[in-house]
Length: 126
Picture: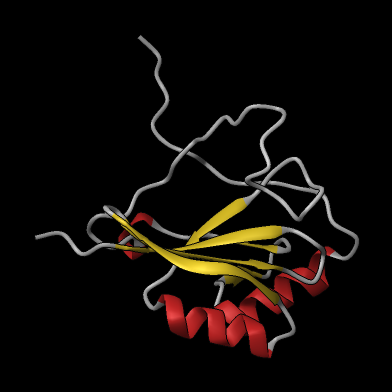
């Protein structure tokens, strides 16, 4: 039987794809692929305890606020505090307080295109 094996990518429209890709490459070290304005993360870069989540939210959720977009991107990071400091330096607006949950620590920011981004530092296994 055919079945899903994982998320193959996150694709969205923006005003200046190359500029936004460059911003993420500079401030979060995204491995931007020169063949297209995006990045490819190989499974070997996922830390123990990390995963990709597919999350369908109710149409009236406010979890993506203050962004008016109908999506939010979650990015795994190895150092949440350091990543938030870097994107702040790059002009991102930091949102909310850092949250610590059973599966790790979370922080949020608004990128230069107005997208809300959730940063996740997975809790180490063990």
